[in-house]
Image (cartoon, rainbow over all chains, first blue to last red; front, side, top):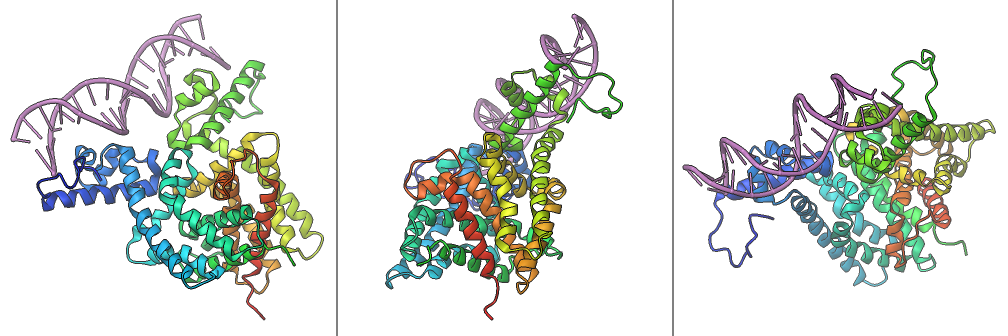
Amino acid sequence: MYAAKTDPKTRQRARSKRAVETHRKVLDAAEKLFAQKGFDGTSVRDIAAEAGVTNALVNFHGGPKEKLFETIVARRAEELSALRNARLEAILTEGEPDLRQVLEAFVQPYLDMASGTDPQWLSYARLVAMVSADARWSTLTARYFGPTALRFAGALARCLPDVPKREVAAGFVFTVSAMLSLCTAQWRVDALAGQAPVAALDPGLQEVLVRFCEAGLRALSRPV
Amino acid sequence: MYAAKTDPKTRQRARSKRAVETHRKVLDAAEKLFAQKGFDGTSVRDIAAEAGVTNALVNFHGGPKEKLFETIVARRAEELSALRNARLEAILTEGEPDLRQVLEAFVQPYLDMASGTDPQWLSYARLVAMVSADARWSTLTARYFGPTALRFAGALARCLPDVPKREVAAGFVFTVSAMLSLCTAQWRVDALAGQAPVAALDPGLQEVLVRFCEAGLRALSRPV
DNA sequence: GTCTATATGTAGATAGAC
DNA sequence: GTCTATCTACATATAGAC
C-alpha cells in the first residue's frame, strides 16, 4: 500500500477515482505476474505493461519492488487467517474438537476461495508455495502465516493426545503442502490419470485431500 | 554438459585434469546457487564467483544459462529414477505388490540420498520443488520425472484396486509434495514443535512421512 | 582452456515537466 | 497523479589474445 507514505489520518485529500483505479490495476497486475513467474522472474516493467500504465506509476503506487511483493502476499494472507481463525474459534468453544473439524477449519476457507469466482485466489497458492520455499521471505511467512499455523498445530495436538507434538507438527506440514499441491498441480493428477486437464478445482479431489490428510494424521497414533 | 558440443566419439583429445576440475566446480556452484535462489535469482556471475572462475568459463563449460540449469536438474534426476525403477522392478517380479513396499520404493531412494554424506542431495529437493511449481520448466519435468511417476502411479493403483485411478493419482501427488516438504521445510516442523532447527533429515520424521502417506492412500478405499 | 575486454540488452528507481 | 527521459547498475554472452 504505497502512495500512502503519509498516515491515513494525516492524509488531507481523498484520492481521485482514477488514482484509486490505477492503484488497483497495479496491485492486480503485480499479483498476477508474481504468482506466474515469481519475484525475480517478474520485472516492474512487466507489471506496468500488464496494468497498462507507465512503470513510474508502478513505483509510485506500489513502492519499491520488494515492498510491493510483500503487500501482495499480505493482503490475502490476512483475509485468509481471519477466516480460518474464526472457524477454529467456533469449534473450540463447542467443547473438545474433532480432528476432521479442525482440518476442515484450516483447509476449507482456502478451498472455497479458490473455487470461487475470483481466479486470483487459486493462483495465490502458487505464490504461497514460492514464498514458503524461499528462505529470503522467511520473515514474511513468519509474520503472516506463523501465528495461525501455531494455533492449528495446537488444536490438532488436542485431537491426537497420544501423538508426540513433533509428529503432529510434521503431519500438519504435510497437510499444508498437499493442499498447496492440489491447487498448483491438479493438472498433474489429470495427467497421471490420463485425462485432459481441468481448469477449475475439482470438488471430488478436495474431498480426497481431506480424507487423505485425516487418515494420515490418525495413523500417527500408536496402536494401543 | 557443455564443453562437449562435439560428440564424445569424435572428441580426439582427453581434457586436462584442470579442465575437468573447472567443469566440476562450475556445475557444483551452479547447483548450489540454483537450489538456493532459483533460476532467475541466480546470475552467471554469481556462479562464477562461487566457483572461483571467470564468468566466461561458466559459459564455456555450462553453455547458456538455461542449458546449464537443465543439466543440473537432469543429472540427479536420472540417477534417482534409475534407483527407484530398479527397486520397483524388484518388487513387481515378486508377485502382487504391497502398498507400503511401493511407497518405500519411491520415497526411500531419495531420503537415503538426502540423509547421506552429499549435502547437495538434500537441497536438490528445493530445486525440484521450484521446477515443479514453474510452468516454464514443464517439459523438463515431463522428460525427467514423468515416466517414473507414471510407473509408480500404475503400481499404486494395483495395490488399491477399488480406488478410482484419479484418486490414486491425487494421493500420489500429495505423497510427492509431502516428501518434498519434509526435505525443504523440516525446520518448520521444528518451529511448530517449539524446538531448535536440526540440520540433518530426521529419521523419525521419515518414518512419520511414510506412515502418513500409506494411511492416506488406504483411506481412499470406500468402506465395503 | 582460460583470460580480459566489451557488445548489447534489461533491470530498478527517480527527477522534473505538466 | 501521471508523464517522458534518463541515471546507474547489472544481466547474458562472445570476440579475440594468450
